[in-house]
Amino acid sequence: MLKVLVPTLMLFPTIWLSSPKWLWPTATAQSLLIAFISLAWLKWASETGWSTSNMYLATDPLSTPLLVLTCWLLPLMILASQNHIYSEPVSRQRLYITHLTSLQTFLIMAFGATEVIMFYIMFEATLIPTLIIITRWGNQTERLNAGTYFLFYTLAGSLPLLVALLLLQQTTGTLSMLILQYSQPLTLDTWGHSIWWAGCLIAFLVKMPLYGVHLWLPKAHVEAPVAGSMVLAAVLLKLGGYGMMRMMIMLDPLSKELAYPFIILALWGILMTGSICLRQTDLKSLIAYSSVSHMGLVAGGILIQTPWGFTGAIILMIAHGLVSSALFCLANTAYERTHSRTMLLARGLQMVFPLTAVWWFTTNLANLALPPLPNLMGEIMIITTLFSWSPWTIALTGLGTLITAAYSLYLFLMTQRGPAPNHIKGLSPFHTREHLLMVLHLIPVILLVAKPELVWGWCH
Amino acid sequence: MASRLSRIWPVVSRVRWSSALGTRCVSQTPKSSAAGAAVVSDLQPVSPALQDSHGHTEVNPFETNPDFHGFHHHDSFVDEWNMRLAFFFGISVAIVIGGTFIHYLPDHGMRQWARREAERLIKQREAEGLPLMTENYYEPGKIILPSSGDE
Image (cartoon, rainbow over the protein chains, first blue to last red):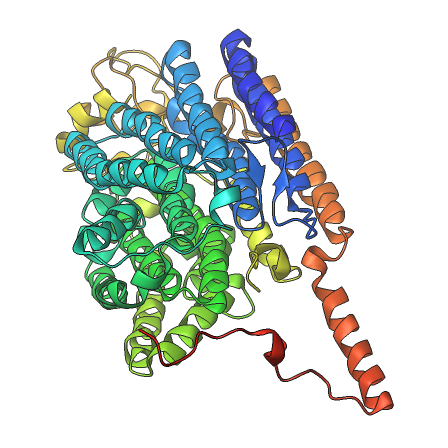
């Protein structure tokens, strides 16, 4: 754990002490090295469930894929931001990369935490750099509203979580996940216990987001600069899923009935947000709503609490993280050229940017869950486990899959196909950097086809 | 840059892009002198809407540096080395060496061992005529139940 955390902390001196010319190359190189070192976490010693480094930080097969995803994403964020930040003064460029790195640090500590309170503190701590990135570097005036929605939705959910965790500490005497996994099942029979159950989960449901409390997400994703959108879509949403999976262990007998409305809300959300995607004119907004849709499926899989549900949720979280981040990068390339997110202004791109059309095509295929990519594997597992819970869910999830395919195809056809309008023909060519960025997103997704057991979690 | 963009955006969005972007402008400020040699960039005048408050227009970086990789706009040396570092650490180190490392990791979670062990045990028990698995997980004799009469 320290062999990744210390180099990440050492990124701060690198950022602030580099000469302005070499700031971005050194930050990129160091963060890629950190990502390379983080791959060592993927070795799972199964004699113990947790590969511990000390009493407070440990990794297990649930947190490891998310940790590797977090570490992989920082260099990608740096690559993606390099173009739109270059015209700012150097100290602001350093500050921007500092925010990204501090997000990385908090996320590593959040996913590696063994004490639930440390996870909570890191969960809250990630809000601050993200809020600053959205409100300071966002491009439209709506960014202030977006930041407010983002901050207060998450805070409103997580304050009950704090109370619930303190109550749990009082009852069981510990909040260490290492110990709680072996504790006796709690007697949870009063109304107070039901409210405690809800308090434990609502923060994560807001973060995922669940359909009814998802309004912060389209705003935050759209108004954030590209690195903010990437980290939000790829990792911060997964904090919610991860938190739910950890908390579910202790909430057991109540969840059988109490999870019911949330599962239905999640499934309905897949359909609703998928349908909204088909009506979007804003490119980033479409990708944001598609994130809500996929996360609805993940939320359903986690709330079901079966081994297949958990495994499918982890697979889908990792695959969606990479693919959604890739889509935001592609949207950003269109935005940097046309200075607009309107899909009508960035159409017919295939004629002018054929290689990029390959990336658009592959990413959209991954988004609509094409086999053998892990997106499909996760979705299939969740759909199967939902079906075995109740056969009626197949209507919702099947329709959801159909709508997902429809809006992914819509996105591809709108941006790539058709005649290229005149203003597109004058756009500047794609940079090597942008192609590298897409390749670094897509290659891990494709490689996961070869060794999916890395992301199966500890249930399977 | 964001504040500049937000200030000029309402004007920019109404500009006819087809005529404005037809030019590849290299110069940062528009030439105001009509006399003298006509420069390529003067053939179609840059509309004031396309300029920001400093009079700078959007510059195509491929004009000054045809090998522009997208990393550093003004220094081609840093641009090239940034590209090399990104590709080396990203592809050669992280994906190739990292991928090889992951490929040669031992049996993840002992899943393949578990399958081999199960097949071996099945073969062994079938050969000995034993049942594949005992029906009861716990020994029934050892379970002590409270008597049904009380309470």
